[in-house]
Length: 307
Image (cartoon, rainbow, N blue to C red; front, side, top):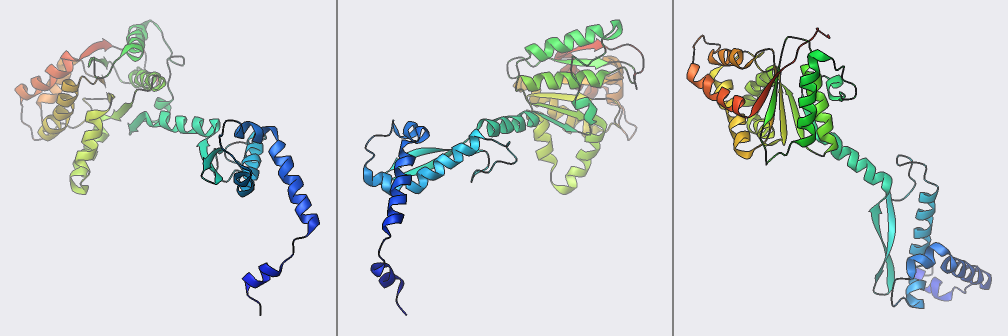
């Protein structure tokens, strides 16, 4: 049995095949797409072109796919969502790839979606916007100040937030959702948290070792929204080691914190002074409230129950 090498040595090229290859080569190198891609590439010899015909065919095919784009999910290119560029590498041409506009849009959307993180907050809240809010006299002041905050806040430079309080169901959380979505358009990261469930989770996080990671996420978010503060069962540990630690860090770093509550400032201070063990710690409650009062503007949200 002949070796592969000896078989290749004895093979005689077919003139017709060679003529076809030559014709394809000439046609390829005259293609406007290839001419345009090669015109700014210096020192491309005939040898380089002969060594790179397969790459040039691939380049042409991939760009034709893009011209007839069937959409990102159905992209037929070798790397879905990527287009090739031609580079010179010694005696051959190589293809490098960059994301197409659809891929860039998808990546941008993913980044946008990551700008709003939430815990225990209903999806409809995260879809709220100022355009969809029902603004009447009873909520006009809150909506105006919320929009002003969303348009002008500068995390890291100005740590002042908002404290929206009022009866159950008047739409405080929806206004916060609108703020979060407006901040998303400004590429400002927002973390919105339903406080009672979050505090319960923090107790469980001690056991699974995730306490510090979760605490750090709330400490460092550009904007933090604590929804329904005052509805939780208060303990000294939650007040001092969790809430106190979050607010202290954010105060020092000038990161705005926003709140919704059924309580006004005085009522929340009274709530914070009690623990689930029956003790009363007014001084520690005042320390927490000093941070909340100093770095938030209280606005009462009135109106009918919209739930």
